[in-house]
Length: 162
Image 1 (cartoon, rainbow, N blue to C red):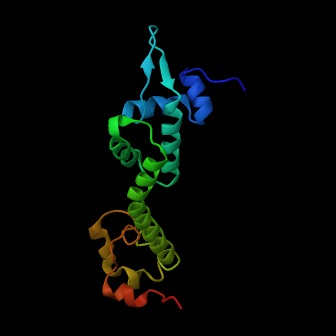
Image 2: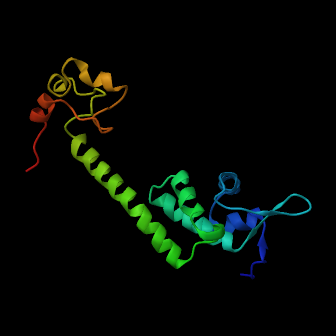
Image 3: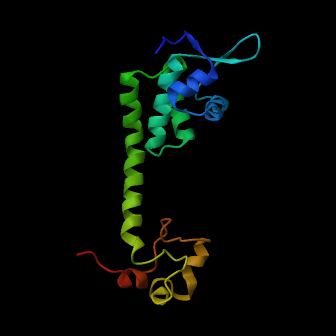
């Protein structure tokens, strides 16, 4: 494979990063990456942008939002490309958020078989989990799965784990 030029076109950047050109434009509009413009108004990305995109993609795979990623990247000195030490610091910052998401997913998994969270798809047990449709006061959808706790009657009716 031939060596890459110092400045990459949007197509070259997309091919090397595995990200569509539309996503690169979107990342740029959010301030996650930046480009220079040629006299013909074409984007040119530095090779360091590839590392920045790799960090963005890794963070997205972890379930982080682009807003969370932007906040973290903006904390880097002079908006530079993250190095190994920066990645370690960023990943430590995201650890608490990931731990909370894992706990939420485990709670969702544990509740899933007993109740839809009162959306309500369980006509047989709805009288136990959601008498008089109390969950409706919290809003539309499966409120118990979104974090609202069912009442004390529902707690007694939920199956216990061995």
